[in-house]
Structures are given as C-alpha cells and as structure tokens.
Length: 234
Image (cartoon, rainbow, N blue to C red; front, side, top):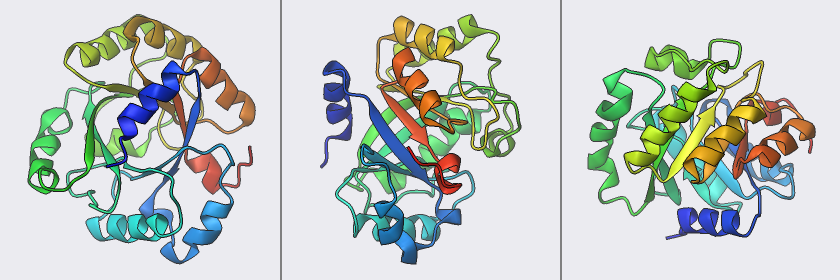
C-alpha cells in the first residue's frame, strides 16, 4: 500500500504544496501513456484518474497503461461505483455533500463496496463539494444536483464542516471540468481556516498564477485536468 493519505498529511505538515494531474480515461489513449507522462510538470506529485461517464473497461485500461510508466501514486477519482481498478494505489471515496441526491451521498458508495472490500486499494473518505464555476459541468448533469454559489462562502464552509464532522479525511472543492471561474481563493482560505484538514481544489485552473493563488490560499493539493489536456505548461 502506498499510504497516499499519510503522505499527503505529512506534506501538508511540512508545508509542501502538491499537484495532481487528472486523466479522463474517455479522452485518453493508453498507447500514448509514456509520451503523456513525459509532458507532466516536474513537480507533479499525484495522478488522478476518473470522469463522470467512464466505463470500467476504460478505467482499467487507462490505469494499467499509466501504472506501467510511472512511480507516481495513482488515485481513482470515480464518477460512479464501477470506476474501480485494483491496479491503482488509492481511491477517493467521494460523497457529494454539495447536493441532496441520495444516490451520490450514499447510494453509489454502497454499490461500490462489493468491489472495494477485497480490492487492496487505500480508501480515503472525501467530502466532495461542487462549486459554481460559471458553466454547467458533467458532475452537475450526471448527479442532477446544483453547485454551491461562490457568493455564499458561509454555506460552503458549513457544508465542508459537515463533512469534517461526519469523518471525512479530505475536503475537495471542485469548480467542475472546463469551469470558467476557478474556486475563489477567498473561499479556499475560509474553508481551510474553518476545517483545518487537508484540502484539494480543482476546476478552472488554467495558468501558473491561478495555481499559486490556490496554494497560497490554503489548498494542499491542486488538481488540473482540462487545461493540461489543452496544452497548459507550468
């Protein structure tokens, strides 16, 4: 086991900011894995793999291809209960706390247990908050839930704290794939200050300035996906 959560907590304690590149298996050609990884920023610390409508076969093929070419920890970021591969190192056990659809609060999680309980994956309880990034994203469509308004930071903080109080080990603030606006640094700051647990932030980050702003505001791990697919260099 790679002890992904422990290493993340140790990096947070040491003040080391981390970067994950998110790969959507639907958009990824396993044959290009080696070339893809060579283009990653040198300070990449994690590979996240997942998407809203990925099939189990697409997930498995992607994970195996990436695993063969890198020693970076591979973390599953599943959109449903079938997006599980034993070839990965860890899985974010997501609860969509920003929505009120029971299927994504607990339904999908229960369905995943049959695959997870004997998988050997490190399972990390994660409170997942979808934040309005200025456009409808795939998570919003698939989960049939609305994102949280960035003009109501108090409610976002309360939602994150509800996740902490219910035992989540990580909080993930997500503006959504292809977001026009990333999560406001002020929101990152108040959530981090209130929760005092490891904070992941993603969605809408397209340049080094936005990346640094998220880190400086309190994000412990920043996730980039769409921007990297479109040729972002950092």
